[in-house]
Structures are given as structure tokens and as C-alpha cells.
Image (cartoon, rainbow, N blue to C red):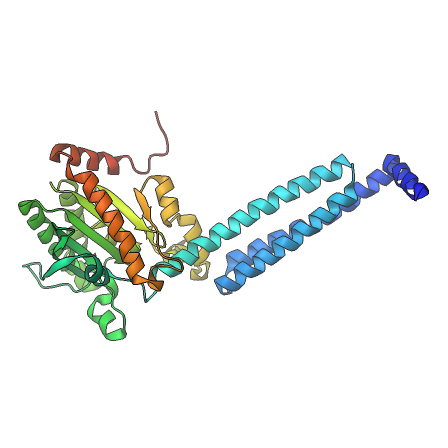
Length: 367
């Protein structure tokens, strides 16, 4: 035993042995780095189900880390080899964060679009009382993708506006998949003006892929209708609370989301374009939608960090679709809290704060 330890000690002092160890470690580091890069390419190229990809990535990263540990033992006190391994370990940690951020954003996108996710009328049934729906814009017709009406919320009269997608094929066609036409935004504005007239807070629940892009919608002034809503909501003299409950798609969402408080459900998304649309433009490949979802920063946590939304409403385990009652209870608490906070604010202060809130968004430099 003594002779073996003496031999190892001699080898550790032998420069040629040290060089051989360092050379061997460098070679293994290069191999492991190639494996890590291959893993990242697999993650970003798509082509596999997200759950399978997540488990494969986790297993591969664990194998790489075990091999790094074995190499650290072989390197002994060789400082050059240990520095190489330390850099590789940092790269593996960074890769893990990239892969799981990448998968996390697309997973949330899928949850936000889940067909069993609660829609506006599901929340109306569980949270509000004395619901009385208001139809039509008094100019063209009624839009079934946006539901509007009067309701009572914990004894307080409110005006409610929200998207409705529909569950089965018949309902989805009737609701136009939650994509509102110009008459929907004009109906919403009509309801907001009634709210202002009678001093009632406005609550909007947003879940839409975007405003309807059809020819008829453009002919009837889709862009003008949304732009008018942006202007009028900015100066509406009652409190407004907007909640992204599922998809918050582009101007179709923003047309009813200029509010004093903008909240997001935990598994909702809010973006200027869908991940598929972004991937088609940036990479000419909609299959890279998961990479686009990460780059767009569309999740509730991302947008809270960027200052675009004011808070995140938690969801039951598994997502809002797993338990409508629990999801509604969490939304109920958040709405109570925000309306109570806004109730006593003078109108002039309310409007100034609302203007400042949106004016300060997307500021990345300070003077």
C-alpha cells in the first residue's frame, strides 16, 4: 500500500505525467462540450414532444456532470485540468438554464391555449352575480368573441368585458375562436362609456390569439377600432383592471388591456406576435416556435420582470384547466385586492398614474 501511494506521489510531481493528465482532460472536455452542444441543437430544433425532450435533456446533463466529477478525481491537483473542468461545469449550468427556459416558455404557451382552460363565462358563473349581458355596438352588429355586460362583484356594481373562445367546434365557430371583429371593440367601448357614466369599475378578462384578420374586419375598420379603444381607455375616468387569463395576442388583447392594473394568470402569455408567427419570420421555420417563445419573453414572470404587467395570479397545480373553481377563487382574490387599492384614488391621480404606467414601459436606458 505504501509503495502504491509513493508511486502516485512521484507521478503527481512528474512533469510529463502532469502534462499527460492535462492533455487527457482537455480531450474529454472537448468531447463533453460537443455532447452539450448537440443537446442544445436538439432542444432548439424541435421535432420531439416537450415532455420527452425535457426528460432526455435532464438525463444527458446528469451523465455529463457525473463524467466531470470523475475527471476531477483523475485530475488531482493538476491546476490546468481543473480550470478546464471548472469552465465546462459553468457551461453545463448555463446550458441547463437555457434549455429549461426554452422548454418552460413553450410549455406555458401550450397551457395558455389548453382547450379546457376557463373562459370569461366560466369566471362569470363562479365569481360574479346579477350578470346581465350587453349585446351589439349599435353600428353594425354583435360580436360573440367578446362578451360584455353588467355584474355585481362582492356587492359592488362593475362592468365586465371578456373574450370567449368556445369549447366544441360549433361554439368555436360561433365565438370566432375568440378573435374579435371591429364591432367587438366598439361594443366594449360602448360598455366602458356606460361604466364611466355610472361610475362603475371596469374589469377585462383577456384570452385571444389576436384580433380577427379577415377582409371584412379590415373593411369595417379593425385598426381604427382598436386605436380608438387605446385612446379612450387611457382617459376613462373609472378604475380599470385587466387580467390576461390565457392568450394575450397582440393588438387584439391590448385593445381591452389599457388599465390601471394589468395582471396575468400564472400560465398565460402576452405577446405582440405568436411564437409560430415569430419563428416563421425570423427563421422561416414555424417548427422553431419553442425557441421563439423563449426569445419573445411572453410568460408572466418575464413580463413582470420587464415591468409590462403588475402582478401574477397563481393557478392550481397542473394549470387553471385542472380546477376551474380553484382558479376562479384565486382570480377573485386578486380582483378584490386591486379594486380595493384603486377605489380611493382621485380621478386625476388615477389618470396620471395610468398614463405614466404605459409611458414608462420598454425603457431600457435612464438619463
